[in-house]
Image (spheres, rainbow, N blue to C red):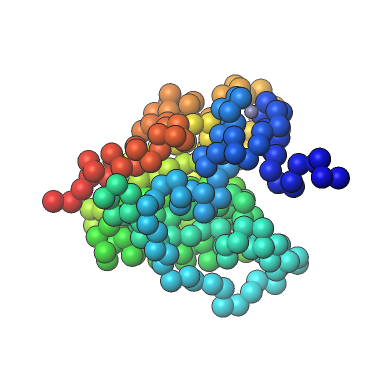
Length: 259
Ligand SMILES: [Zn+2]
């Protein structure tokens, strides 16, 4: 069957339904027909926003959680993404700017916040503070990870406390909200940066639209929880198209350079 395409080379666009070759999706994973953005992996995001990237020492779980089926889910996510958890951080350079970059990955159990992600976020925040570097977080998360229960929720305030200390120390902080930024992540550190921008088309909110509609029994506007709508209501500093993101990050880091 040599006339069939090689597996994985074509991918149907979830928005316009056209079949698009991986070369046409390109490094930025944008549909050439309708402009739809596929969600980027950790490696793709690091490639987009850095020239060099030196990972911080990797924190891993000392004792596994016993929630039924959780270990299998974790193993599957690690195999699928090639990363050990939903958050990766390191020291990055881009156009002569040095900064601490943290990336959440929606491909890893929907980028959910758990004890390890929380510990790695605090590690990144502390590293930025001790090394006097700006902190740039690319956020993509469905919220807190339910398999770790209340310990996941605890990360909301412990990460936020570390984040506040960094802001108080005067380090520049920039959060880039990408699709999706939801739940306990949007309700804690996602909006705590000096500058909060979103990638075009991102869905940003707390509870999902369907849940709110079912609870309130009221239809919601079509642009509800969209980056554009949040910007229009003053919740974001800017909405940036994916091809412009590296230049925007560079410009913001230059503007906030320490003398
Ligand atoms: Zn498309």
